[in-house]
Length: 83
Image 1: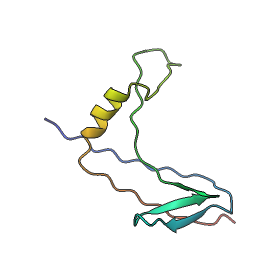
Image 2: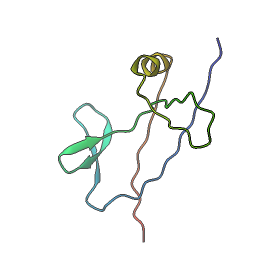
Image 3: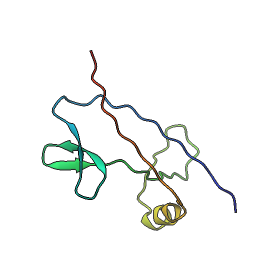
């Protein structure tokens, strides 16, 4: 068995009324209107070698199998204001 380390970094420009709040579950999430948004990883898969291949997570069993291999996951959100 091997271990794959994956690091993702994303920046989103968000509306001013979205805010970072602590959810009752004890995690920090975005509050967008009456909804809470967290980010996680979802593997996307294709069987095509075409440059314009369609990638999806529609094979739920395969997606679940991949996610079952995740042994650790950490995320951090921070809001900075653009000038």
